[in-house]
Length: 300
Image 1: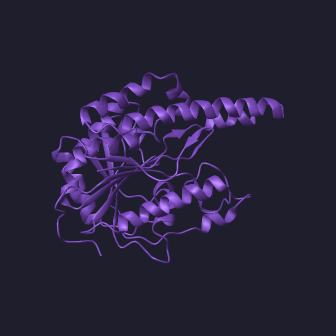
Image 2: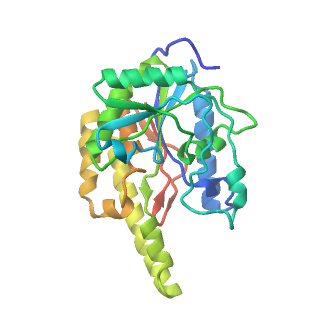
Image 3: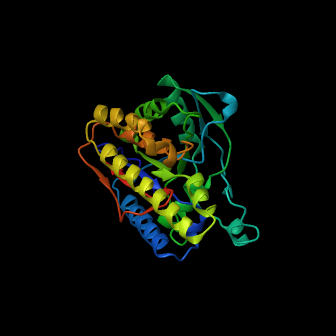
């Protein structure tokens, strides 16, 4: 059960590489490593004492609606949240069983409202919405907290900002940082590298030889950005980390690794929430593929 006892020190902050729904059924060696990494993080979170009263999630698949324009955050206050089968790929022919996947969980509209009030008091425009749990949360959590041993800590979902203002995402993390002292465990779920166009460029190559050349090129770009990012995000001083993270946008690898930024922004939120940290540690075995990186990080 979640603890009613406030923590004696701020709870840690996590960032996880969430992958797609194929994470749950692919038998590739790389996929098994990603699964094992996430299971280990789930065990680590379960071992935290006192238990968090909620896991506050920021997902690459929950960006505030474009209709609100930039500068607005959404907080999910729905009771009885459902699982969203919000996949990019149409699996109805290749793997129709994924639309039957479920994940037992708890929500807490009263805690979500508490978070919404905290954001508004912090000067952030926040709107309450009702929606389900996207696959950026439930797919990795299905491994981290499997249905046979359900998670008894409620999930509170907060969006990232819509748009390309990266500094605003770090500011969002800074705004929720103090909730770590009140029993909220903050978790960003995204990808350190997430580039479907890069993957498509490999598949589009006309010959096997050209596909292999394209694969090697994309893999080199992905590894390069992943290396820069790891060196940046593990800076212990919050101001240095913020400056270095924002400078990543000027790298030529940035646009190739994140042609859209919604999978990068949860990492910025987590980094902002971490503040000055005594320890920041990448977790698990490194997995970098052409166009994808599954970096996991614990702050604090």
